Image 1 (spheres, helix red, strand yellow):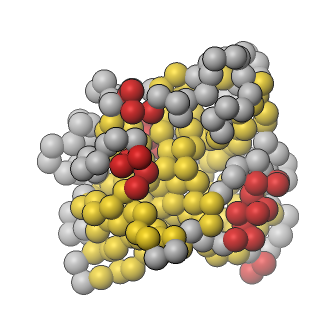
Image 2: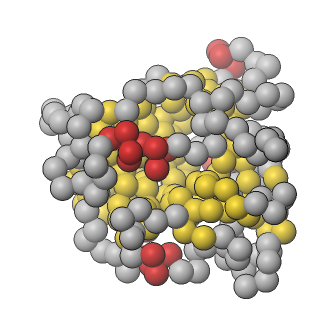
Image 3: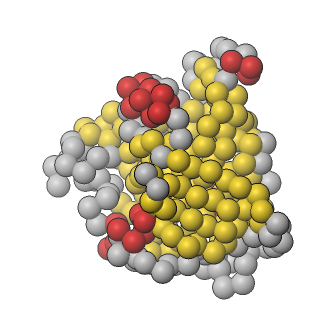
Length: 256
């Protein structure tokens, strides 16, 4: 029986929700040993593996016109966020585990939105300086805090197209896209807490384009003991309408 939790990744949300346009998105994905994420997975959940590896993605989004679904686009906000995330089978209120995004470290460049996100959606963002600069040979994505570089990647546009970079763990871009982006719900769990916060997130259909990047700093991976892990590939999308739920679903977790 289909429930409200079984929605497609390209299905618009019903009722009051948030909507905006993803002007530019980069999903930069790294293969890591599953044991590196021990302690980051909530009780009752399971990591989703591909090729025997867990996948941590740095998801950068430049969002425009973000506003409640009943409001006109000119009233929307513009901001950047950078989230480290993985794929996992998370427990839902009906007792089923579903393939979902598990947010590991959410960052945003607007203090007001960090405050509002925690109180309205239950997702606790950290305020960070996040910027994407276009350079002669590609893009430079950086996240900083009080002068410290937390993330730094150079993304190449020269190979942006339908083919994965040589040496990728995925057979083709469509399979990488399906595994990493074909999801309709996201969840966040704080270590030591007994509840999981779930929110739906969907978007209009997009064209799968991929490229490569050079990662020069990634504090989150370093904290996992995965220093020096290279990005497998980068998926990019531009000018895609996006839908975000605003009513979190709280799941009481089993005891570890």
